[in-house]
Length: 197
Image 1 (tube, rainbow, N blue to C red):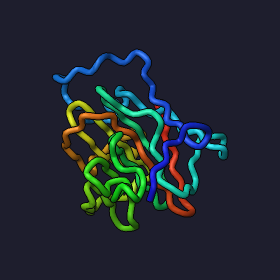
Image 2: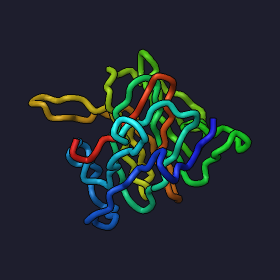
Image 3: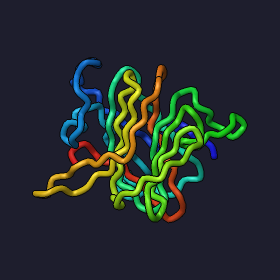
Image 4: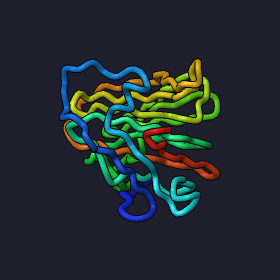
């Protein structure tokens, strides 16, 4: 598997940076969807089909052009089929000649995906099964300076509000920029939700 950094029309992840305060290390971690959405947030994906919001089958993994450094980020992704979403550090291998380079296959990347009967979470080549009901929406929270990476499933709560349920959390020393990444299998797609969805 290879990563591609997409620079033009294929995929742009635009991170909103409007009116965000500087990183404050001594505030409590967000735990609700409303609190998480106050972080730097992925706005949308642009693709040449479906009104430029849908990523369909790709031949490679992709990393977004924009990354996080010195801040927190949160984004939600609609998924259908075999999709892995995750994050990778800037220095993570991008080509097979660099060794294991898929999301979660090395010590500089983390990934999560639905495997038919449960979620699978990967880091450093270790696969962890997480038994939880399928949700069509997976989200990621990253606190780069604190080294926190959390994967959530987003579900409808009581009174039609959406709630997050923690799937898995990693703690790591992350001293460099970290990028959202995606892998989409055949007959599958993922779409980054806009902040107001």
